[in-house]
Image (cartoon, one colour):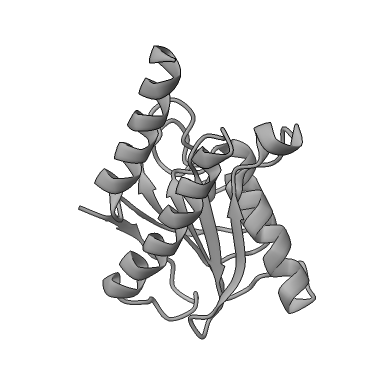
Amino acid sequence: MAKRSETPGKSPVPSPESYAAWMGQALELAAAAAGSQDVPVGALVVDRAGEVVGRGRNVREELGDPTGHAEVVALREAARSVDAWRLDGCTLVVTLEPCVMCAGAAMAARVDRVVFAAWDPKAGACGSVWDLTRDPLATHLVDVVGGVRAEESAALLVDFFEGRRLG
């Protein structure tokens, strides 16, 4: 079940079907990350019109980059695509609840909302461990929808980590 939080004044709220379809694309990116030995996390940035303007997957291991999280990669591509750092009206779709760095990057990019699949009880910053995106002291609040296709994302993560423990 998706957990929702919406702030007045944000872009129109997409349908749950849109969230599920976008998450399917993010799950494909997550699977690609696992194929390159990175934690299987994938992300998209979708503009106000519902068009994908940024895609990313974890590339920390592949590039040796500590900031190579799927969300950061997708936000960077989206900014290049729209030729602006401000991503007003955009939605960040990601297969795992963003960490503090990624939640902060979404806030800095001024996305309207974050939609994610699996909750991260160890490092999640959109409601699990922290709730950075909706901190009343923040200069930009982000709507959050969690739990979209969570079981599929969780299965990718469990398979990845079980394979590493056994291998």
